[in-house]
Length: 279
Length: 149
Image (cartoon, rainbow over all chains, first blue to last red; front, side, top):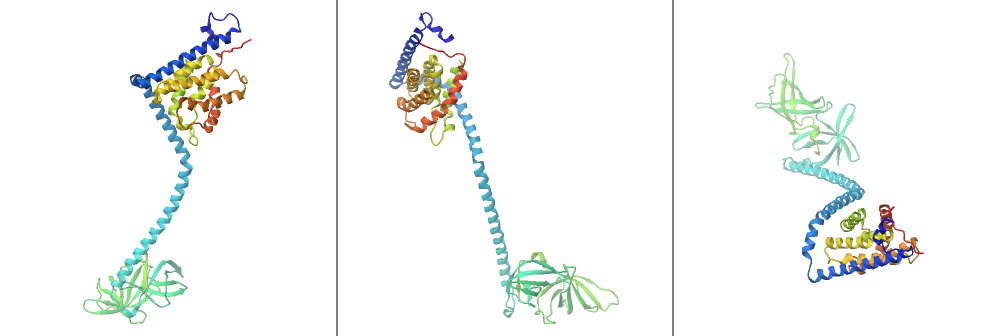
C-alpha cells in the first residue's frame, strides 16, 4: 500500500480506490500521450537534434559498450556453433591433403623417371641393345643376398644398366616383378678390364659386404693405379663390352702373391635406384 | 528505482542485443513484453516507465521523438484497460493481451520491422514468462492490490 501515498486525501471509502486509481491513471496517460504527440510533432516540424545530441553524449557510450558486449557474445556463440563444422572440414582437408601428397609424390617420381629417361637417351649406346625402362619398387633378401625388385617387362639373364653404368642382371622373374642381382652382391662375378694409362688389365669384379665391389685376379706384375676406369670386358659373354663399373679407389698388394686386388668405387648406390633399364 | 534502471537496461538490450535472439529472422519485442509485464504487475508505474523507455528508445534508434514513447503508452494503456475486464489473473488473459499487443505495436509505431508477424507474437509469448517472472521478482512485496466492492 505504500504506493498509494499519492492518492492521499482522495479516498474516503474502499470502493473509491479503483475509481480514483483509474481516474488518476487516465489523467496520467493523457498527459504522457499528449507529451509524446507534442514531442513527435516538434521533432518532425522543427527538429530536436540538439536535444538528441545532448542525450546521445550520455547514452551512446553505454550503447556502444552493449553493442561490443553483444558482438563478443555473438562471436563466442558463432565460434561454438561452428566447431562441429570446422571439425568436419578439418577432416575433409586432411583427407584432401593426403591425396595431394600422394599426387605430389607420384609427380616427383614421374619427374625423376623423366630425368633418368632423358639422361639415358643422351647416352650413346649401340641401338641393338634395345633398352627397356623398369621401375625399382623395393628390395628383397634371398639367402642372405640383397636383391632389387623391379616392375616391368624383363626376363632372366638380362643385363640391367643405368646410363652407361652396369647395375647387375635379372636373376628371376615372376609376372611383372623381377629380381635383380646387383654387382654389389657377393654372388656377382663380372669380367672386367681395368683401363690404365699404359695398358688394359683383365680382372674379375666381385661384390663384397653388400656395398663394396673389388677387382680381383689382377696379376701382381700388372700396373693398376688409383683412378683407373673399370669397364666390362665382355669376356664371359654375359655382359656386353664397355659398360662402366667404376674406378679404382685403392690397390692392395702383398709381396709373394700371384694376384693383387683393388677396391672399385662405384658412382651409384642401391638407395639411388628409381628407374633402371634392362637390355 | 530498480524498476527504472532495469527498464533502461531492457531498452538497451532490446536495441543492441536484439540480433542475438533472432530466430529465422524474427526477434522478440523485449521492451514491449517488459512493459506488458510491468502493466500487469505494477500498473501505477507503467505509464511513466513506458514513456521514459519509449523516449529512450527513440533517442537510441534515431527516429522521431515520441514515436515509441506514444506507442508503448498505448500498449500499456491497452493492458490497463483490458487486464481486469477479461478473465482476471488468468493465463489466457495474458496470452491474448500479449498477442494483441504484439500485433498492434508495429502498427502503432508505423514501424515495419517485418510488419505483422505471427512468428513474433509466438516469440513474444515465449519470452513473456521469463520477463514476467523478472518483473514479479523485482516488484514482490510492493504490488498494489486494488479491489472494488
